[in-house]
Length: 326
Image 1 (spheres, rainbow, N blue to C red):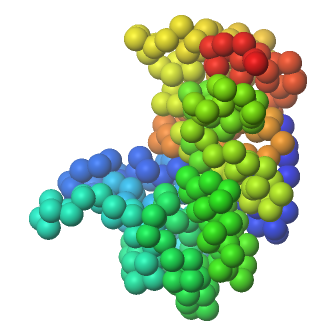
Image 2 (cartoon, one colour):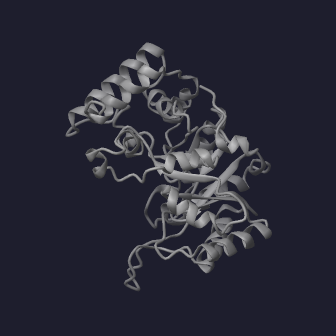
């Protein structure tokens, strides 16, 4: 299914799927990078490109910086590739620092944003990134300070566009009020296992809605403002597409069976059905797939050819909810 997504409407030639790079660099250890890690990065990028995926999602904390570093080494060995792809990264999370006793925390100060971007560019070995996201909300955010950081980064040619992650409509509007240019992206957790973004709307003005944590109006705000909604964790660690279901609730098992049935009838992968369900939403959602397995990347890319009817979409939603619609 081909849909013009919000980034495309802004003239940014992004693919409908994004390759999440958190799994590159050997994972969350402090072990040094190896030739095998670099070989894996080449293979992952080659597979993504062969599937029409041209956008790659990073964060300064992924694999303690090694994900960006190995990606940068891969780019260095492939002159010309940088101009053919879009690179997005995130900053704002400061991890636990055992040496100082400081806890994990968030930091949207101008000083930290600027320093983080310099680190990102250094690890990636590039002069700019296409989009920078603020990584989770910071309760101490001062929008004017964020605006100053963004202006400095754009003026220096270090970042082309900006966005956020895991934010509500109100949080976005609060920051946007100080910015001269629109926020381009909001990255949220959306999947069959994470349905509060849909439940918030269908339980409006009902008692059951009080238990739904997703902030009302966030999807609508993004649609009205032409903000690209990106879905992180869209395959829910594979529990609906082939991972072990031991210990999972009955609704998960039934949804996995329905996904498999629809995949079989349509002649596509189970990943294609799970992602196609997100693509069917009129917000023009852009799933971020976090696998480094070439087979799963190819299976996910089949989502672009899936056509789910309205009835099939609701079948999947109600099954994943594990209860009837209100």
